[in-house]
Image (cartoon, rainbow, N blue to C red; front, top):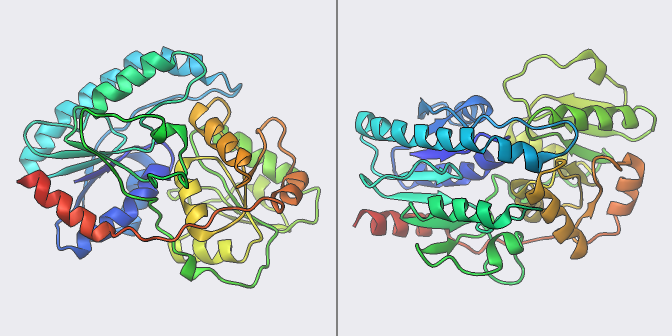
Length: 353
C-alpha cells in the first residue's frame, strides 16, 4: 500500500514512479490517500484499488507567520497521527496488506507488517523550536523499518542540510536518487511561452500567489501558461481570463511536459518535488517559497547560493524582473543512473524476509 501526504501535489507526484514500478514488478498496489492527492491518483491509476485515509488538516496563514501557526496546531497534528495509526490496523486486516510505503505520513507504521518511510527532510530547518521538532520527526521516522530519501547522497544533492548534515542511525537509510514522473526525453524544443507557472501548495497562500502572478502578467506582453494545481476543479474563474495567459486547472502528464518544453523557464514554489522535477528536466526556474514554510525558504536559498535557480520572496515578487534574472542562473541537470525497479525488488524481499 502506497500512502502520500496530502499537502499539495508534491508528495503524491513523487509516488507516481514508485507506483508504476511496483505495477511493472507484478505487485498488487493499493493507494491510501485523501483530498486532492486522492483525485489525482484516481485519474492517473483508474485501475487500482483506493482507500480513503483522512489527511492532516493544517491551516496556513495569509501573513506568513507560519512558525506560531504550526506550533499551535501541533496537538491536532499529533492526534491525526494517532488516528491514522489506528486506522492502519483495520486497513491491513481488511485488505491483506503486506507492505506499507508511507510518504511523510508519520502514523503509518505497525509491527504487523514491514513499513518504509519516504522523506527528504531528515533534519527539519526551522527559525525556532528546531531541536524539539526534530525530536518529534526522528521519533516517528524510527518507528518504521527503514527510510528512503529521494536524493543523491554525494555533494551534488538537491536537499542540502535537510538530509545531509549528519546520519540517523536507528534504522537503515537509503538514498534512492530524485523521484520524478517526468523525463527530459519528452521535452518539446520549440519555445512559445515566456514562462510556465505552476501554482501549488495549501490555501490561502496558493490563491494569494496565483492572484499576484495574474495581476502582474496582465500589465505586460509576456506570454504565460499557468497551471493552478487543482485537478478536481472544472471551472476557471473569470478573473483569470486574459489574452496573454493560458490557464489550466490541471494538465495530464504528457501535456504538462509538452507545455514546459515550450516555455523558456518555470515559475513555481520551492517545494522539494518541484526541484526534483526541474533537475530531471534541466529547466531554468524562478523559485518563490510559500511564506513562512521554512523548508521551502531553505531550499530556495540553498539553490540560489549554488547559482542553480533565481529566487524571490512572495512579498518582493516581480514577474518581469524574475524572468530576466533567471536566465543568468545555470539550472540543474541530473542523469538518472539509479535502478528503482531493482531497488524496490530487493527491499521488498528483504523486508518480508
